[in-house]
Image 1 (spheres, rainbow, N blue to C red):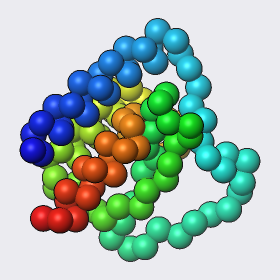
Image 2: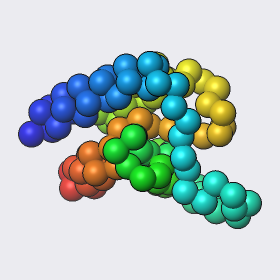
Image 3: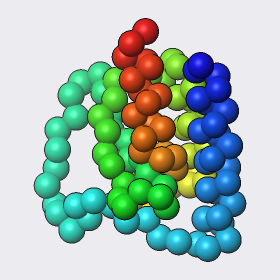
Image 4: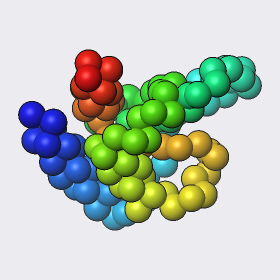
Length: 111
């Protein structure tokens, strides 16, 4: 099941990357105007997830241990393809639907 989910996420994300490169659309982040800094616990990092299907980008705080997961590494590679290492917001942004990301990290938590 994990491989099928990953293939579905990658296929969807590649389509999304093609559309974004054609449209050069801007991202909408939730709480964009707020200056509130939220603490990230030690051993964790924050990522923003969302695509054009989502109303806004959602912030997730995930454990550093997810970096060892091949599926998570694939998502980061896709983010690098789209944004490189310098995103305008200065954050890690993963261009996939929030529902896919939630399903993926729930698989990590279960194992």
